[in-house]
Image (cartoon, rainbow, N blue to C red; front, side, top):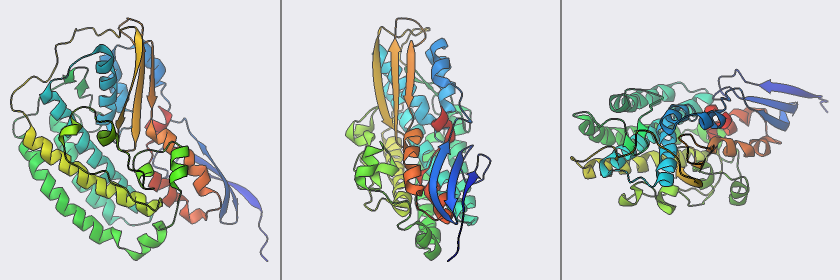
Length: 366
């Protein structure tokens, strides 16, 4: 019998497969993980506390830097919370621009995840294909907002700029292109025997575990829970679009993989419908005061981000800065289940399990 001693192993914070500055302290016996402790906080900026000294328009650039892979949804949630609190009616055209921006960003987020997740297993080609297609989306968002990653595009009451001439046609052309590329993604990876062996049955948890750990997004829907705020508690103009809530039953890394790729297809449906319904005339900003003041009271809104449920709580006391602001960041909550998933696992499955959860450390740390 081989005798081994327990040892501590640091994975990260500078590690190519931790998807950011994330540290895992592992207690291992041979190649089996006995205990895993996540160590976070390397990106903490104190956004929520800083917001107490900022006007609402000044807070928006800070939200870009939370989930910087899908920044448009962060832009939206702070604006949506302020609009709800101040009873501001957003013009229809601005809502369509917001939907297009958020769903394009959701696709870009899932593409980046797909490429880096497969790269974790040692395959380089998928990353190159994912970045090629994501680049097309970033170009579209750059034309719309003037930035490629941290957009600062949305405003309380609408959006910063209208779509430039010819932009909608480019978005329309992108949809069939991306649908064709998705078929190639599946041919390249989805049925690959090595990939299936590394993901099927790996990092598995139940529906009850997902709910108890407050998981959301694909991490929740991969266990069969059909819950998507765009459908179940529609906000903006999502109730105008026909799309499906994607679920899988197995709750393993492969189920989460399937959910995210299928969600790309559903986002393309929304984008296609939004382009067809897009109003040619109309305002992109509501008539709002130059200095916004949060009335006394509090509000909480939640939306469906690329990684799950993003919440925003605002308490106001009649001043131009929020008295208190708090975000519910899905990556932070989704990360909680990681120690449970890693306990008793072989160390070779660590990166597959972590990658399948899909965290963004800017959102974990806030």
